[in-house]
Image (cartoon, rainbow, N blue to C red; front, side, top):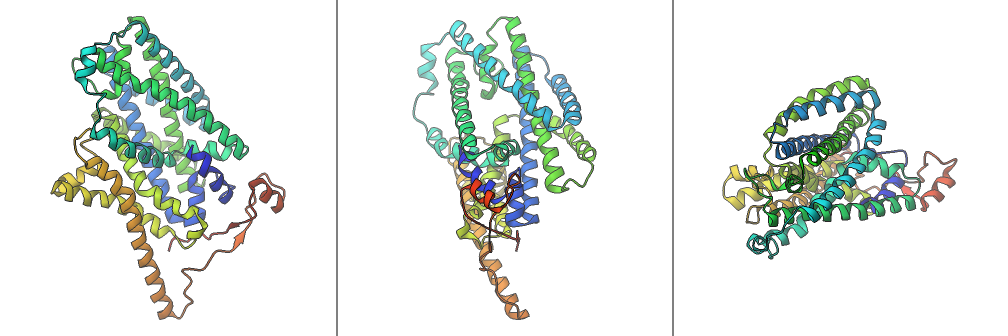
Length: 437
């Protein structure tokens, strides 16, 4: 729902954009936009690793076979058709992705009803219904992690900017929210059912992230075969979106569409190899997502300060320092909490995951945004002092707190300024020069 709230604001401020980095370039300057683009591509890189890691684990759990050949074939196929069809193909495969999710949910419900037998002794012995420290921590961690990380997903922003009106955006986001909520409740419940039926952890023990598929493993072989095909199609549809997002981000945000698109696609092909290697070595899909969540929790809060025109003096220097400072704060917290720098560094990678019975993960997700804002405030003070001294030394006017001029944004579909103002429901917006320092 955050896109329904912030989407219209950012569309008013950057009417000719189509991703978050366009507003960032306009508001904070080129350096900050490149910084955000780099973080976006790192996030997509981590998502690709997580996708392939999950695929090979699922293939192994359902068939007992090595998932590497399936991973290689998926990478080859998605690379070929995304190179030929671009983002349009990705939008088409999104429809297949939705259909496969619905199909898996239906099969999962049938499995639970027909094949899953709950052992009441396991319900009590598992302790999953008891209050726990982790449960209370997740009330804070999950909203912060998911909310901030969604800002790095270019496909969300493209749909936000492509909506015909704010009402259409609100309607679409509301429908998606309800649908996703239902899916998450059903899929999330699979973990409880797998534990209570004895399907998880299994023999040999499997990751809890694939507990849904451990339930489906109880079905007849021909149904498992269908499930496997659906999983591959679903994974392929997700993986091509990440590939296309990296190509789009690199082409538009970094090279400003001046470099031949085939060179960028060639670069994406080159990173597939390390993606596959890291996916096969990654022990936890959840850990990969948590790393990207920690990065976004450090950066997005300081970035969004600039959405409010009352903070017109907030510049790109503060955003970059704050984003990097948030990660450094996690390291400092970890070093103090564990008493050594090694574990402090490991906390940035969340080596203990979420399931360490302590406050380390919770502290990391508090330290990242709070530390980022504190570092950003320190950077702001440093910048203002530096600019004041330079103004005195060079005899220039001190302009760190000059308010930007007011301007009406002209939307790409508008005929004139008045039409643009009416379309966005507001008279004026501040016109920023995109200053970094």
